[in-house]
Length: 301
Image (cartoon, rainbow, N blue to C red; front, side):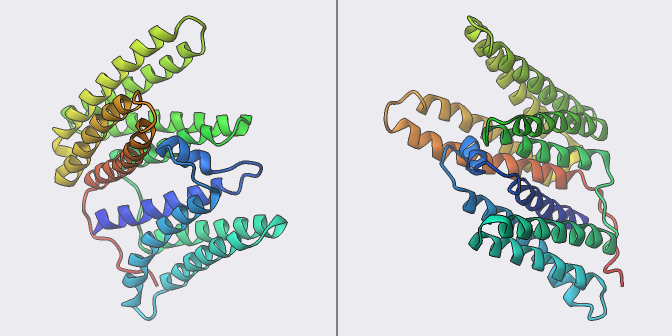
């Protein structure tokens, strides 16, 4: 039960983050998806993705509270539905009305999210679970640097990288020895990627940057292979780690297709989109695998 609640509240939180980022003015959120998938998504599809995430998390909660006609939690489920509706309507208005509607929608979603967590007495209370959640959020924020050239976008991306790093540290603390070694290797790979990015900005250091990036890739792959052997993440977490290994293989294939003229970019776009999905689902499964099952409140009145 708690695994399903972890999935539900993670989906809602991910959708809220996407919708909140969309409020920032003077940018095109297509950069998020373009960076991750290679496709030139417009802002509307990205907002729809955020709405879909919140809705996919809200519907299971709606089914749960329907069984209790006197549930106070039902009110906050409707608050989430209201936020979803406002986000959808905001796509059809312009100017200040659009901004106000988006802000109100996000506020409603945040209130509903917080109150439903209280109603179900749910919390991401395990260190490993928190770590996996931070990795998911950090990964989402770190690709936000592609949205625009402003300092705000860079700060958001840096926050994402920091959350990613801290999440891996928390994850390592909450796993067994094998899992901790895997998380630490992935954390080292992140550090190497940051170093590679910095070196790439220095003239005549492109080759060194490339070598460091390759080393980072190998270290990250071995990290996922280690994580896959961890007994602390259970079968569902192991399946998530396997998806992350497959994702690394797909990234290698995408790099080879990238050198093919004309048609190569099409294959890269498709493979990169598949990669984004596999990465997200993989880490969500690891997050669910870290959950220690316990009885939750059915519904708080």
